[in-house]
Amino acid sequence: MSKWCKSHKFLVLIGESGVGKSNLLSRFTKNEFSHDSRTTIGVEFSTRTVQLNSFTIKAQIWDTAGLERYRAITSAYYRGAVGALLVYDITKHLTYESVERWLKELLDHADQHMVVMLVGNKTDLESERSVPSEEAKDFADKNGLMFLETSALESTNVEAAFNGVLAEIHRKVSSREVLRGPISAVSLNSSGAESTEENKPCCRNI
Picture: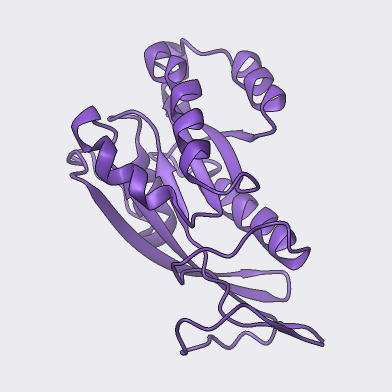
């Protein structure tokens, strides 16, 4: 049986301000949604431990500010990340138009093999949709991204989005496709026990 110790990884949520990144995070980590969610200042984070097949995964997820004035601060958190959810609002085409810029900035600072999912949020506002699913999926396919549409309000596909990214990270970590970053945040352990030791190299005992 294989056992993974600390893998020194974390996820980031990126995208324009107001697309629902904070509510996606709070829905996934606390099953909460706030209609009065405030604008993220700088960077905030939350953690959640999930069961993925025979593995227990402890993920640290960073919610970054979408406002331009915080860009220099938030981009520093891309380094070492092995997963990202790039979020846009399906009712605001401008937030989708900025996706390419966000992706370039992310890949300029992060590992080129990181897992990125393009997420179209707010499907509960389908009648106000301005970004066709096919258009976004085509962009994702051309850029090698995963793709899913979600509703943080209705909790639609939120689990699937985060768990999908974590599953792909696990696959890449297992095959050593992802470089190890400096921040300890995702622990993979087939026995279900969480490691309490920090700053050790990722290892696997067969």
